[in-house]
Image (cartoon, rainbow, N blue to C red):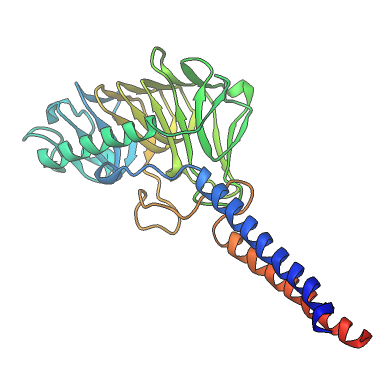
Length: 308
């Protein structure tokens, strides 16, 4: 009887081991294929971080939730008022909006350096998926995207850009526009929509310059080499971070995004979803296969015992 049972039992055990190994390997590769979030470090609390020469807001009617900073330009170039900002307005010197202005040149220098690090980090992200210039009317899942031209465009008439988290709140969306164009053009009335767990804190746009038109509803952190211009009445759940240029507003709403379940927006999230298995699903898949295979083994042994 021992010889009769040994070969089938060995085959079943071998099958179970190979199946579990395959699931774990494929799942692991799938999990690590998706991008991780971009760590902004000390730049994370800033709704607006600008270089030079200024931060302007025609009419001083914009509403900012998050910190504001201007460096290396002096605080005199910050034209926002204290009543517009729920957060701290930082300056490199003893000029700028009073009574809320805080002079802290070293902090601003560190934040700008962290912005540069994040900008370079995004530049090195791979693999890249090339998408058409017009993003309106498309649905994208987590990944790193570049443009077929020198610009990303979102046009209201084309429809909303939908970012699908595939039920994974740690899904990260990164957009890279090559130099030579405006980088990002969000037309009047355009919309970026988050669905299935996607979060604004995990959306990043690396561009040369950015222009967001009137009444646009935009999502994500803009990492611009130069200037960022936002026209009248736009709503942005994200950040306007300009390394070298200025930031221009007109009656807009900018809110720093916070990742659900995280204390800070730049914490590294869990393993990202790639459409196959993510996080604990890989482990539970392997356990399920083990249990099923073990059950088959027990049933087979019981059957053989009855027939002998």
